[in-house]
Image (cartoon, rainbow, N blue to C red; front, side, top):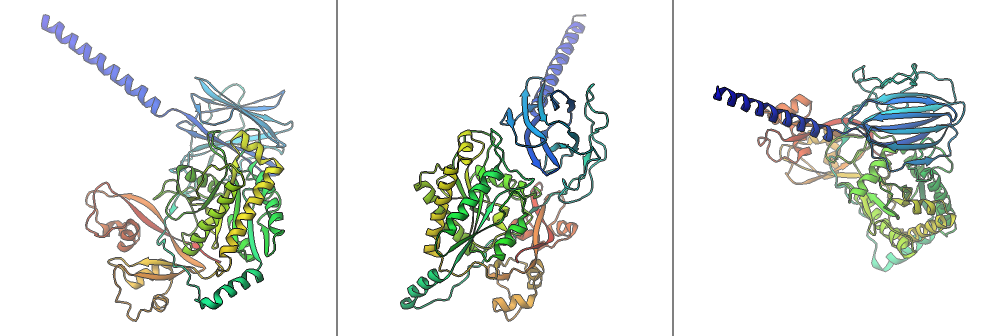
Length: 566
C-alpha cells in the first residue's frame, strides 16, 4: 500500500510539473506572438482618404461608426501599439484627425471625420514580405464595393478566399464585411554584375586642357533636375502636428529652383511644380528629356522615434546600406513609390528596376553629396549624419547621371517639423544646396556628360560559355566578341572580365531562395527551376558545383524583362 501511495504521489507530481511546463510554454508563446499595430499610413485622392493599418499576429478587430461628432472607432483586442503618435490633426476634407489609446485590453484608434462621409473597410492578407493590413477608405460618395485594383501593384494568384471576419459588436455595420485583396507574388532583384566600366574621356594635351575646361565651364549651361518627393495621393511622412512631407519638400524645391536660376550658367527644372504624383519612370524621363546634368531629390526624413533630427545626404549604393537608418529611409521612400517589397539577398532592400549603374556616375554622386554636405554643415544646418550615406533608393537607381537624395530634416521631430514649414529655413537650405552644386560643377562640370551608353562587367566563371553569357544579358555573342576583341568564342579565360552593353530592353535577374535538401545536386536544382548551373553558381558565388550542404539557402535567378535605359 505504501508503494501504491508513493507511485500515486510521483504520478501526481509528474502531472503537476507537466501542467506547469505546458502553462509556461503557452505563456511564452503568447508573449512571442503578441498582437501589434505597427504603423498607420495615410493616402489621399480628390475623392477619397485611405488609412492603412499594419497588423502583426492578429486578424481580429472591430469597426464601429459613431455620430455627434462623426467618427470611426477601430478596436484591436489584445494588441499593443508601436505607432509613435497618439493624437494627430490633418488638413483633409474627410479626416480631421486620428487619436490612439492603448491599455491591457486593446488598442483603440478613433478617426475623426467630417460630416456627410461614407466609408468601407477590407483586409489585405499577409504575404511573405508584407504584414496583414486593414484598409479603411473614407469617401463623400455613395458607398460601393471596394475597388482593389488601385491597391495591388502586381496581380498574382489570390490567397485563400476566406479570412477571419471582424469580431461582431452591436455597432458594427452589417454591410461592411472584411474583404480580401489578391496579393502580389514578391520577388527581389539581385544584380548580375555590379562593376560598370568607367567611361574613358579623351586625353587632351596638358598645355590646352585648362583652356578647354575653362571654355566648357563658360559655354555650357548646366541643368539640374530637382525632384520634390511624393505628391498627390502620396503625402509622404506626416509630422506630429499634421504637416505633410509632400508640401514642405515642394516649397523647398521651388526655392531651390529660384536660387539655381539666379546663378550664371545654371538652370533648374522641377519634376513636379504642384501637388501631383509623378511616377518613378516619369521623373527619370523628365530629367533625361531636359538633358539634365545632375539630379537632386528632396525629401523630409521620418523615424518611429521622435528623437532623431537634422539633415542627411544619400547616394545610391550597389552593395547595401551604410547604416540601419539608411536602410529604413530607403525602405520608406521606395514603398511610397508603389514598389513591391521583394525578398532576397538583403532583406531591407527592394527594387523592380535594373541593377545597372555606371561606376563613373556613382563616383560623381558621392563627390556631389560630399560637396553639398560640407556646405550644409558650414552654413549652420543641423546634420543627422556628418558623412554621405548610401542606400538603395529606387528614384536614384533609375537615373544615369550624378544623383543625390537630400533629407532636409526629420519631419517626425517636433522641432524639425517647425523648421520645415519656416520660409527662412527653406531659403537657407535651398541656398546651401545651390552653393554645394556650384562647387561640384566648378570642379567637375568640365567632364563628359553622364548620359553615354552604359556598360557592366561580367567576370567569367568556370563553366561559362559565350552563348550562355550572351543569353543572360540579352545580347548577341557576336556583339560580345566585337566589344571585347575576341576572335574565338570558345577561348574564354576564367577570371577575365567581359564588357557587356546595356540595351533598352535588357534581361534583369531577380531571385527566389531555395534550401538544399538531402539528395540534391546543383544540376537537379537548376533543372527544377528552369535555369542553368552557371547562373546558380554565379548568383551564389560558388566555385565548385559538387560542394552543396544540406540546409544551405541558394538564390535561384528569375528572369524578367525590364526597361534598363532610355
